[in-house]
Each structure stands twice: as structure tokens, then as C-alpha cells.
Length: 539
Image (cartoon, rainbow, N blue to C red; front, top):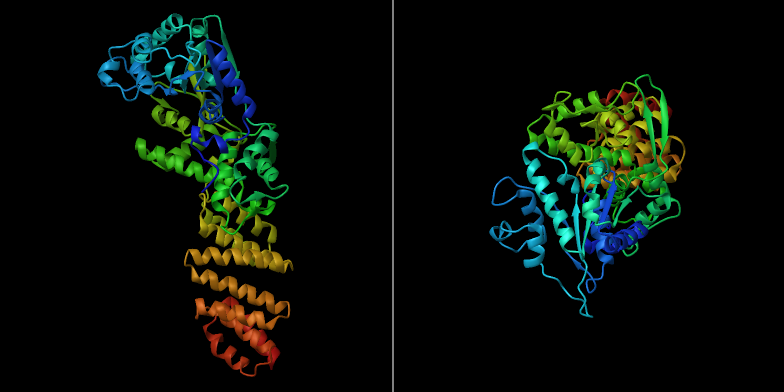
């Protein structure tokens, strides 16, 4: 079971694996209990919901405070009563009949459904209420404007009438200005704001290493730091081939969570100590963002009846400039640069786009610079793998390595077929560069991946390569063992047959030449020169 929750927010029951936010959790819990209004704000994906559920709530003492369930305003147009008020009260009292809630204002609810509770000394407890994603209170379809204003008025009335009520609003920072007109009424003279920022590098290290403490795995020195550096850095290339490197001082929790969860799921089961090499192979954030974007775009396309390729082209054309920087565009009445506004809204919810309100217009841009390369990437993993193998044929080791890494980055999370091909390519590069230990390590990984996928031709290729590697090292016994194993997976594999003949010839077996002559006519063209050279040498 993974100790990282992936893309969903943390739950209150996951407090033990929620790390890196101790200070923020403690401060928000204190502010919430001490002030009439606390506004928690931050960028989309910075972890506000997780902080509330797994950081703040577990720090509250239920014997001293009366905490209402954390609410999210998700109004529905049908049913009795004001849909915004109903959405709030339904979160606070999910077991109460809707018809009963429809009769109540917020103040009436607190008097009749949620009466004052007393602590052990007989004193009234403070009542803590939180609304997550509270931006939904302040924007939406214009037809619901009066109903939104009614709920905001009811909240102000309730806070005025119930002096022990403490309200926390959590929302995206671009909507903060919309709360300002209500702060005085909501806070009753006691109000504060808390800006939730991305992780510092130190907090990020705690967020990476803390959750694995009881899993039987641990990070070797430098491995977690390398994982974090991968999130803090991004390389860009513009249309003219110019490269630039971006370095971020803080660490995006959204990207770090993607990276950690996907790394964990991608690691072989036998790994107990996560080495820096594991983070290099499996922990590249670009690869995981690609997999995430693929799934997010597929979901949005399916839910809104728009072609996935159309969304991809729209994102590239609209939000990436010719200099490979983020572009901003404003929302039209029904469409944004030719795409229905509903699709843009959905991409905000999927953390692909972010919004900012300026001069009463909503502007969109890619959520993070890191997404520029991800969105701009057109090729699929198999295209990169073909390029890598072509580079191998020309002994272009650097490009072979680069394309194999790009294939891994472009793959969806946990694609074993890509991992197998890439590992085989890395092994062939190491073999060509006289590093047998590294070559065999990659070959073992590739063989395991191929076997899982039942790609026995791949298993045969890797075992043949290991046999040739052993032969080059002078170990004919291991060479014969590996090549015979390769032929057991693919008896007609010409490369394995040729390697067997070569091994037999070097072992002094007289029948080796006859074996070679019997298969030479069946060999593919690129192997015939090697076979003829072997026959010539044996003459």
C-alpha cells in the first residue's frame, strides 16, 4: 500500500502520513479558535484541503470545541430552498431531512439543529465552522447571484447572533479580493488571513521521507533530495532550439505528491532502500505529469464531448508562446479562444489551468511552468524508443540514452512495457561502454519487465545480450547458460542462434561451424556479415 495519497487530498484518518505542514497546521488551528473569521488562501493545488483535513482538524480537542463537519458549497438547482444554503446545511447535518433543512436559516439551524454544547466545566463550547473551496460562494452562474448573496447575508447574521461561532474560509488566492467586503461582518472585529505557500526545501524533505517510516522502505542518502530537486528544476527549449533552465526556490506540493506516489508505485517490489538511481529512472516529475495530463485530458474530453486531440492542440496553441513561455488569455462570453468555457473550467479543476480575475475578466494560463514541456510534447513513448534504437545502431550513445529517458517521461505512470524497453537500451549502452555490472543490472530489470508483460522475444533479446556480455568477459559457462535460456523463450530467434554458434566456436566445439552454416541462410541481413566473419575466422 502506498504511503502517498496521490492526487486526492489527505483525509483526517491520514494524519500520521501527512508531513511537512506541522507549523502551518498548528497556526491555522490556533487562529481558527481565536478569531471570528480566518481566511486560508493559496494557489490551486498548494494543499489547502489536505491541511484542513489532515493537519488542522486532528489538532482540535473535541472535548473543548464543537466542530461542524467541513463543508463545501456544491449547490444543485433542484429541490426545496436556497441551493447554496441547502448545500451548506446538508454538509453540517447530512442525516437531517432536506425538507426540514429547507425551512431553516443558518442562525435557526444553529439554534434548533445544533444547540449549544457544554464542556466538562459547564461552559459553552466555541463552534468551529469551515467552508472549503469557498470561492464557490463568490462566483458562478449569474442566475444564482441573489441566492449566493442570501447565503452570505445569513452567514453574517449567524456570526452576529452567535458570538461563539468561528468561521474559516479556504479559497484560491485569486478570489481573495471577493472576501474583503465581508471580512468585517464575518469577523466581528476579529479576523485574520493565512497565506499557505508551497513547501520550503526542508519541509519538502519531511513530506517525502516522513510517510515511509513504517513501510519497510527508506531513502538512501541523497535520494529524497534528488527527487525534490527534480520538482524545483525545469528545462525548456524554444522553437529555435535554445535551452533554458528554471530553478524554483519553493517546492510545489501538487507536483511533489504526483512524483512521490508514482515513484512508489513504479519501484520493483524487491526494493527496500530507494537509491538516487531509482529516483533518476522512476522519479522524473515530467514523466508523471505527462501521465497525469493524459488522464486529465481524457476525462475532460469524455465528460464534455470534445476531442482529446482538440483540447491538446488548443492548450498548445493558446497557452504556450513561440518563446516557450506561458501565455495568458481572457475568457469570452461562451468560449475561450475557440474552446467552450466549460472545458476551461474543467481544466482548472484538473489543475492544468489556473485563473485570475483582473478588471472583471477571468484570465487563464497554464498552472505551472513545468506544464509547458508536458503540454508541448506530441510524441508517444514508442516514437522515442524507435529513435533510441536508431541511435544505438549508429553508436550514438548520448542520444540513445536521451531518447530512452524521454520515452519514460512520456509514458503513463507504471507502464511496464516502456520501462522494459528503456532498461534494455540503458543496458546496451552500458555494455558498449564496458560497464558490465551496470549492464547486467539493467538487463535483469528489462527481463523482469518483459516477463511480466509476456513479451518473450524481449526476454530472449536481453538474455542473449547477457550471454554475449559474459562471453566478452571470458565466462563461457555463463554465456552458454544465458543463451540457452534465451532460446528456450524464443527458439527461432536468429540473434540467439548466432550467439550460441559464436559461443560454441570459442569453446572449441567442432560442430559449431556446422551449426552456423545451417542457420546463416535464415539470418536477417544485418547479422549475415557477422556470421560470415565467424566462419572465415574458423577456417
